[in-house]
Length: 289
Image 1 (cartoon, rainbow, N blue to C red):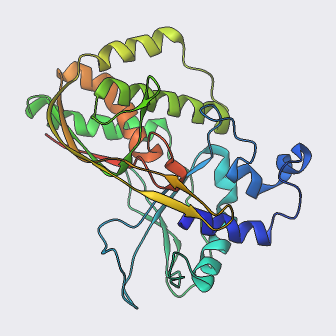
Image 2: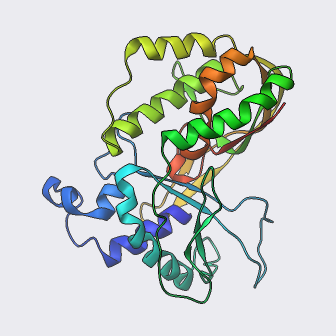
Image 3: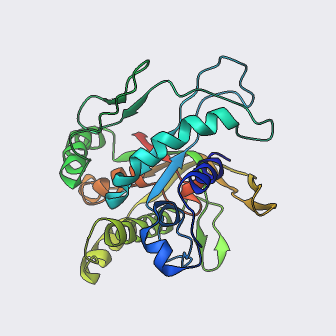
């Protein structure tokens, strides 16, 4: 998979130490990105990937494609490592057929401004965006979206472009229950903020208030389906199941409820939600009702 190929190239080029040595992990960008000593359910990797969307299963020679990489907080300092690794992945090849590609351009998507050209086609100069997106940008985007919810009978659609894989009470969730979805989303955002952006834990009363608001959201149309997906690792020679929900779900709630929840749903579009986000799972988009 793309994540495995990227980390494989970076391991060969950058990581020369023992990934089980805490002293090495503390200074190695590859180990930091891969979270070599990850504590399941607690430690969050500082990046997420979204695979190419809206493309055929088999790309012919010359067909263009794009994928998304999101770096959270402190992880932005490792952007150069990714920009160096991506062309090498294209040269070596990725996937079962070792398909090769060339990097044409890189751009940064911004909530309230035009996309920023990080690497223009035909050029070699990298120009990072002047600043990363923050909560002020998300709040502004939420305010821009709220009027459409107020005129749309409080209906909001979430479209799950890549598998949404949620665990609830020890079992895979196979229906788009909003309460569970939102609880996992808040949990992920809070962990990312604390671990990668010097944030502080959300006060319990704030979490409870948002949870109570989420409980007032009702599912009115379920257009999701369960898809079976797995990922193989050349390094471990094992397969990992990434199965989850894709499709769309329509929810309804009073406008005042959406006003509380919308900023965090917008953050979720950026951060993704559920299991296996570094491999591309849990990417969704907010649409009108």
